[in-house]
Length: 123
Length: 505
Image 1 (tube, rainbow over the protein chains, first blue to last red):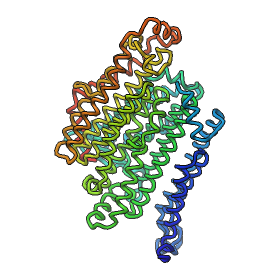
Image 2: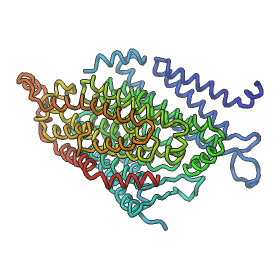
Image 3: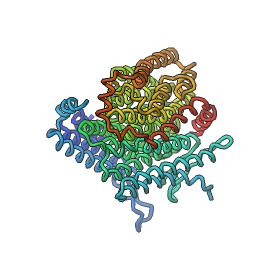
């Protein structure tokens, strides 16, 4: 059992992180904490992706003096992680800007209070 | 040397992106607006030319690799008759939505923010095109995210408090959806090692034949379908939609309801048919889940719409019901169901923008009131808007000669011989009645002359400039109405193209 966990340590950590992030997104009322939750979720996925492409003892996939011979790690998941990080950063920036705008207008960033206030404002 | 026409799909994606960047540096709002409409029209034209080329005879589909990197390293798009037809309609409707909602747009969005709004429109179109054309799942993911940001920006362009909150809810739901999609993608990549759809498809077929990794495959398909379902407002995840689509400015509502939701559905269709294969989707039970959610969406979307008095939110709830129809067609798990869904995508993409544009115009001539009570008699203040709303509503109910009727007919005939036949037919019948229950009162409300004192009151509060003839709106409404009738009367050639396209998907 313990051996299995150690073998799959990245996947186990990723699942735990994902759970933490997901619960944050669902249960927190504070919008900022929700964004943090999303970031934790994303990190979990990136960890899983990066670990999938990793080969024990592999080196960076750059064609150098050694030619194609040595064992490389799989570059595709790393590429995905890079793209994913860019996406995650831009989405985070966008949500933070939006939250700032909401705070200026309503003076709170708790979702339940916001929904209450917006309901009154609606015609 | 490939024929020139095979470059057009890539050109159109590229043109949209370049136009988006240009819009961001243009100072004058009106110039950016013209540029965006121009690029939408150009895309529609290029797609039409592509359609003419690939739809000839028995039709063919081609793969266009970008750069000089051949598969499995490079990125590719795949174009067939279905994709060309869909993008043509998407781009055309987008141009019409921008034209028709222009007066509201200039009223709701600040002058100096208008170029940025146009940037977001261009990006939305670029991501719609890419989602339709892509032959690589990860490119699909990237454009899902671009589409999310652009769509959220379209909602918040009208800077009011409730809109900001609707945007943040939309954003969080969308992020959840794309997160689920990304995990599904990770699992799929882990079991197969590919991202390009043709390689994925052969790898999955091998795995399915050998019975290996059955659970990871099912989980990954489920996560991808759920992720795209959240983003396209599949029934239990639709709660963000009414606020976001109901509160935004007219053009945004038309684009979001009519087009943005469809981009994700097209990607889902491609995943179901090209990557996993319909037989495997049925075997994994995925289609049953989609069918059930679709049926529930058809009922509950309409029930919520009946209880709504705010006309744009009513239309938004009606979108939930119409999206339910599309998912029902996918859930039938047969090519006939997919064909019916694709046809309904076209019908809804013309009807809903028409309804939103007309509703926006009707409320503009009634002092920007949105509740049906205050819209009474508004059809007489702008006849074109009144007729357009009526045409759209009748098509949504499914009256013969209107587009909605044909798609219901094809949904019903696709459901024959499937296992859920009785349930599907009954739900279609019930949903038609429910649709009539809220569209007929709405149509009556706009055509009934209100009591004189109410009319006097509305004339006092409404801006006389709004009552002037709106040429842009009238042109857009007439073209969209013509589209609804074309889909309802001359549907045979369109369905032939869709059938050919689904086979070549």
